Amino acid sequence: MRSLFSVIFFRILRTTFYSTFALAFCAWIVQSSRYMEVLSVNSVSLTKFIEFTSYLSVDIILIILPISFATSTAFIFHRFNESNQLIAVKAAGVTPLKLLIPLMQMACILITCIYFGNMYVSPAAWTNFRSMEFSIKNNIDAPEKAGSIFSGNGFHVYAQQYNGNFLFENIYIIDRRSAEKTHCYYAKSGTVKNNMLLLMDGEQIEIDQMGRRHSLIKFKSHQHNLHSILSIVKKPSQANEKFMDELLQDTNDDDQNKLQQALFHQKMTSPLLTVVFALLSFLLVLLSPYRRKPSYARMLALTSAIIFVQGTFFWMANAAARNPIFIAFNYAFIVFLILVPLILIVFYVRRK
Image (cartoon, rainbow, N blue to C red; front, side, top):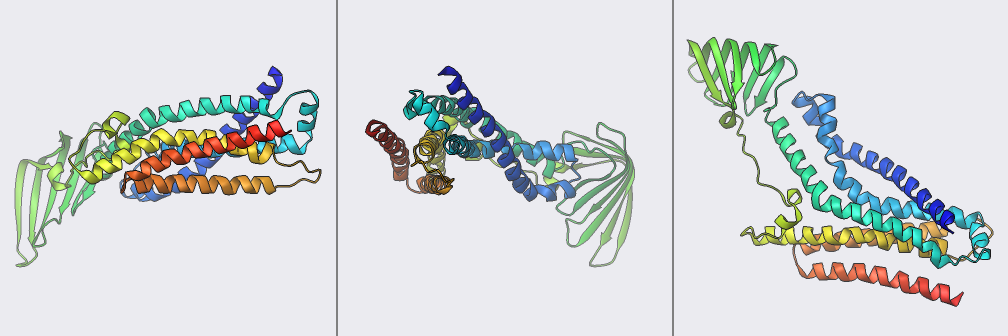
């Protein structure tokens, strides 16, 4: 008996791992393609770009995990049913209800992982993602090579040589922030400290676009505040960047409070979809009527049920951000989807 349960458990575990990895990888490619401009415009290395976009994979995995678990369970049980192994198991005195034990064990493990991901891993990943996005878009990180160093809001900085640790040689600056005047700078050397660009031994050329007059000023040192030049203002933390206890804190903004409460309850209920999908897989695939001729109707029924449940769940979760009454509906929806398959499974087994 234990060996049978172990075989089912580890087959589902292995298939869930591979399917989650494959689906998450495909979703990561789609998500990361939205940030390809960051890779080219900000001269970000491929390694850093992968690290940057990998933070997006956390929420993708947490959403995909219940679905991949359900499809993996359905795949294993479908083969179990089509290969007549269910008949052999029943002949050995094992009731179909006992086959639910390894499935529920696997579901409990995944629920724990998803809860941990929702509470700690996801907000930490989003915080790191926003911090890295802020750093890349505003060019705060040290460049990896010479060339375009800073660029934004009409202020462009180029360096012919980069010596590391924010030390540059032969710096050229074009400042087009003013519509009336253009400023060009050249400096033999420069550095960046505390977001201040310090130029040494250079000259400034001022071009008056209206009067066509030019002026040349030489300097020993000159500095630019990169925060003010690049309009670097860090946005406040978004709801998905906050931990569970922070989502329940009052922000003096009714819309933001509704959004945070809706997200909190979504994170509390979403792991339970694992149980819902497990029971639906067990009911629609393993306990479906036996046919000698292979049939994939049960798989189609399960896929349709998963799409309906997942779509309805997310619709209610989004509606809860506007009307908190949908929070209660979401909980009731999950409880209903757990109890109904359980009742049908017990009724089916007792009837047999």
